[in-house]
Amino acid sequence: MSQMPQQAALSNCPSCEWPLESGDRFCGACGYDLSVVPARPDDHPTIALNGSGLQPGEADGAGVDGAPWPVAAAPGGSDTPAAPHLPTDLQGTDSGGSALPPQPPTGSPVSPASGVRFDRPPVPDEYPLQAPDPRVASLAASAEEAKLCVACRAGRVDNDGYCENCGHAQPRERDHMEQESGPVAAVSDRGLRHHRNEDAFGIGTATLPDGAPASVAIVCDGVSSATRPDDASLAAARAAGDSLLTALPRGTHPQQAMHDAIVAASHAVNALADEPATAREHSPHQNAPACTIVGAVVTSGLLVVGWVGDSRAYWVPVDRSSPPARLTEDDSWAAQMVSAGLMSEAEAYADERAHAITGWLGADAYELEPHTASFKPDRPGVVVVCTDGLWNYAEAAEEMAEVVPPDAAVRPLHSARVLVGHALDGGGHDNVTVAVVPFPAVPQGAGSA
Image (cartoon, rainbow, N blue to C red):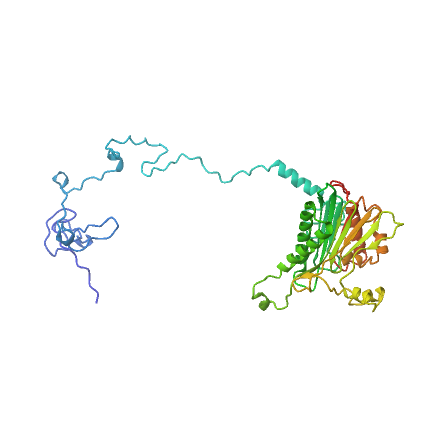
């Protein structure tokens, strides 16, 4: 059963101060309902500043373990509590006992209670953008103006990657690459059948110790049946090019420098095969990255070529009445058949096994055997350094000479574009990369338009 709460006894009526007796529920003078008066607490517990109450025995002047607490004197002898002081009512002193300066007047930017300044300028909702650097803007504008369509070579490429003149979609960065370094130029294209470009090249110029100029070109073709062939060709081209451009100014003989460059390229490709011990377990179909390489060094009187694989170098004289020549021999099944006298060149290269290579750069290659050869042409001409994506459509030296423009020695970049276009017009079944190097080498600064 439920019970009503017990009401504490009152001595006087809260309304009219009429004396009450124990058990009264209503005031006998005014009729005030005494049941609505809250119960008076039996004691006045002290609450600590942290909100917790004192332990038993601490109230009523008793401290911990019965120790008496000092009792505050009643203000004015009355039960009325003293009025509280505000911090501003007391004059503070510093650590030396000197009076502190008076508080700032109302409206000051300093809040007396917190000491936080409120006179900071308002924060805007939006910040104005800084004006672009005109130098950067000028460079960006120049780059945009120089970006022409690779198809028509006339229209500007818009931000969406299409030519504003012919509407041709522009390739990705490595799908089509062009570079010119002094008198040397190279062009690489993905072709029409491959989903990516696995070729790479490196070109440059150097000055020999005697002050004579030297031109360098490296072309690499990734082996498609290997893992990461595009990485292999790029690593090899960069390593070989850096090696040549470092060794030639030091006086290293060009043929020795070419040999060392191929070895450096081999090490760079081999390093790509380094992988965690568990990589083959998760991807057992992977094999070592691999590529072929061919390069040329041209000086004022010497022509040096080096290669491993089936990428080639051709000599095409300016005087077309002089015979052209192929300067390299393939490391391939077809070349072995011809060398052994088992098949004619036409029969060997018509076989489906013709392009199976017997030499390449990679961790799983046979013993590395860099091939190098030196020539001293007696007339000016150009060296065409290319992958099989080009020479498949101009295999014989005479066929290559027919495709090379007559002004290739003075317009190497234009000539490289023409050669890539010839391969694309022929079907573009493979990646196409070609570098054109005039002989003899000309000083830096000479080039083509």
